[in-house]
Image (tube, rainbow, N blue to C red; front, top):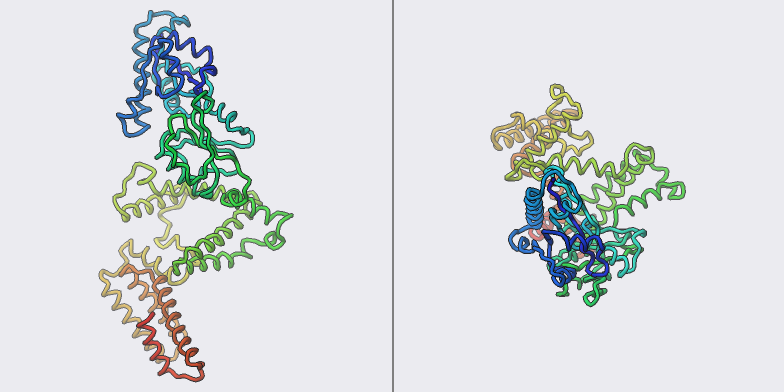
Length: 508
């Protein structure tokens, strides 16, 4: 006789809802194991003299739920083997089978939010152990009834241990189960507050459907963790909402709006645009986002990042209309790229510091190119630099790539000497009066300056941007002094402006 485990649900807690089949098996089982005895039905077992052993002590012994569930599954399978070895050989009689099976009882329905059952379903076939699952009333049955909502309207069930803002959908009913203490309620609250307003009403339910124990309370979200009543039978319910402000916080709504704008019933201007016609908009919005970053302006960043995101969505929508790809394809490709290029996070590789992480990134990036069919023998070291990058940034990336194969100065002094050499050549070109030569030598000087920036760990684009800001602030000081004195630029000279400039250097 093969080892056998009977997995059954104790229901939501009301004895009247316990199925007759489960009750008969409970009474006949030689070995009864409970995931937890913290359940209203356990009182009925005691009253009827049904012996059992619970796994509650494992929750105290182990630091993580995963370890607890692994230990429970292992113990159940071992107990099933022990009972099987004591059974008479050569018979598969149903009564005999039940008499030599482990009876494992869990709260609610065994197929709802029960990790141990999932482990048994996965492991038992590999271990040659049979199992039978007997249903029970799930806590969801009582949730639908007592909280008064129909799951056909849209419904999701989340584990309190795994609630994240990304999983929340305000447009459907949400039940968060296993909110068993105040600390867990706090974690749930913080996740919900990323999506819902602090004052949003949520429903806390305890022991739903259990006579004399049920409690249901509506509370504002910010007060969710102020109750001490949380326990093994507690859940949080967030009703679906048609609130436009909540819906507007979702990516799905953004995708829908952009599709509407491009539809025949949408905006004539948006509908007529092409990739090329709004290319300049993409560049402009990106620079405005960079300006907000440089100004350390959170409100500006929020707005400008939205404008950049709009450009991405418009381009994605154009391709979705032709059937080539959608925004969701872009997201999938990005997620897969991030996971693939971070083996030290999502795989087995390690990275002790940022430099090692960057090496992992470059190694996996090269592997991506190989998988796409790129011939490593025909690739240039300088490949992969966008043609339309700003010149300073492009120079920096060219030099950085060349440096990786040894084409570089040994010391920063060599880079500084190169600047002096290029400056002398520029002076000679200026004296010669040859415009083409002057432009070429100026380019060489700027390229050398970028190389020095790389040596000292400075981004030339950022360095020049800060200098531009500094110049603007100091020049604004000169303009302010003229206004204070009731004058304009026609009524001053370089000597006076230079004096104000020096004052501005000490102030700005």
